[in-house]
Every structure is written in structure tokens, then in C-alpha cells.
Image 1: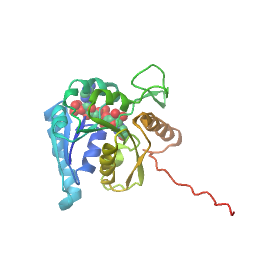
Image 2: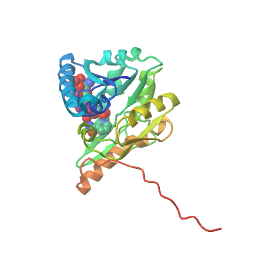
Image 3: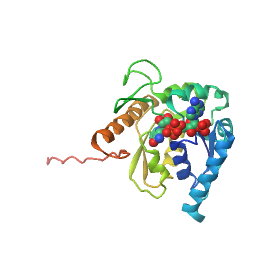
Image 4: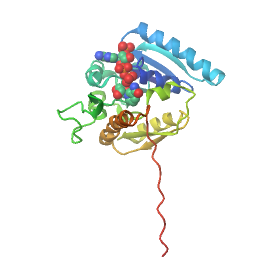
Length: 238
Ligand SMILES: NC(=O)c1ccc[n+]([C@@H]2O[C@H](COP(=O)([O-])OP(=O)(O)OC[C@H]3O[C@@H](n4cnc5c(N)ncnc54)[C@H](OP(=O)(O)O)[C@@H]3O)[C@@H](O)[C@H]2O)c1
């Protein structure tokens, strides 16, 4: 699959690229072709050194616009505050057959702690407000947005040999797009895709990240993530 990453030179973009390049063709997008090319050169070497002959994909640096034009799956890995406005600049490139993955976590830090801060509206942590993924959906229509990866630390993805059994929560409205993103998640060893319902539920995924960061700050943990653990109730005899 050809996967474009807008804002791919950042921590999250680089982490996703090195993991997905095992099987797929990655287009690292940037506002600067020079930066995209330098990043892709380094990441290709890093990934090839680790995967060796098992690496079926590759990593190429391109301008963000070209990543959108060429890819069938487009990952948005931009800073939250600029994400919607920046994508608006080339929204006409998002055609119906493209799937867009929003990794965006709108949050702010006040003193030591983090707060989910919707892109729209005023209030911190107001769960009546729309998620970042829904805001991006308006911009990239007719392409479909799937929300995911917000609770996966970039550092985990980038350290190719780290093995963590964690879950990737996915929200979306389109079955085919969800299935495609679910299969990409499975392509990264030990990550499990779990659906959480329609795109409007993305606000719950997005708000877990500041919660996890607060857990890290308050309990001296590094890069916590989540795994959903099933609990089996005792069956009462009839
Ligand atoms: N970091 C994590 O562990 C993590 C985990 C889960 C989710 N996320 C989410 O993933 C997204 C990316 O996170 P990140 O830490 O990788 O972000 P980042 O490093 O701050 O930014 C990513 C890239 O965005 C581009 N960029 C910066 N300012 C821009 C602007 N004004 N207009 C257009 N492009 C701009 C830059 O690329 P160029 O300068 O090359 O254009 C930069 O390398 C965020 O929405 C974050 O919430 C991050």
C-alpha cells in the first residue's frame, strides 16, 4: 500500500514510517522537500539495518501535497493547532477513495498537567465539543477519516525492536476504511486494533492521551499506553 504521512518528519510520523515500511511504501511529507529527503534517507537506513532482507517497503521524502496526491492512505501527523487550517490549503486533493488517519491529539499543558482541548470551542475538556478527527473530516471530505494511534507513544514506534502488547483504538464511520486501517495496525507486531464506534467517539480516544500523560507525570512512569483487559465474571450456578 502507498501511505503518505503529512507532517512525517516529526516524532510520530517517523515512528509510524519505520514500523509500516516493513511492508508498505511510505511517503514522508514535509513543507520542505530537503527536510523530507534527509529524513527519509536516515529512516531508510535505520529500517533496512534492522529489518534487513525482510523489508518489503521503502521510505521516500516528498512535499506534503505530493504525499496526499500519490497515497491511498494519508496519515495526518501535524501539530493540532495548525492541522485543520494547513490541510484546508490542499483539501481538493482528498478524493473519495482515499482513507485519512487522524493521529491528532488536541491538548494543552497547564503547569505540570495536560488537558484535552478541543480545536473548536473555548472550554478545556468539554466533551460536548467535536473531536479533532471530526473537524478534519469536514476538511478532507469526500475522503473518510479514521481516528487512531493517539495512545501509542512515538518513542515506542520508533524503537523498532521494542515489543509492547498495546491496543490501538479506532473510531470511524466507514466500514471499508476501518477495515483498511485495522489491517495496517495489525502489520505492526503486537499492536491490536480495537474499534470504539463512530467518528464522534474520537473525542474519547483523544482525551485518553492527556490522561495517560498525567498518569506519567504523577506516578513517574515513562510513555504509558493502554491495553484493554477482558474480565470474565464468575458464572452463577442455575
Ligand atoms: N509524539 C507522540 O508521541 C504522539 C503520540 C500520539 C499522537 N501524536 C499526535 O501526532 C501528531 C504529530 O505529533 P509530533 O509529536 O510528531 O508533532 P511535531 O513534531 O510537533 O510536528 C510534526 C511535523 O509537523 C510539521 N509542522 C510543524 N509546524 C507546522 C505548521 N505550522 N504547518 C504545517 N506543518 C507543520 C513539521 O514538519 P515540517 O517542518 O517538515 O513540515 C513537523 O515535523 C500530533 O497531532 C500529536 O498529537 C503524537
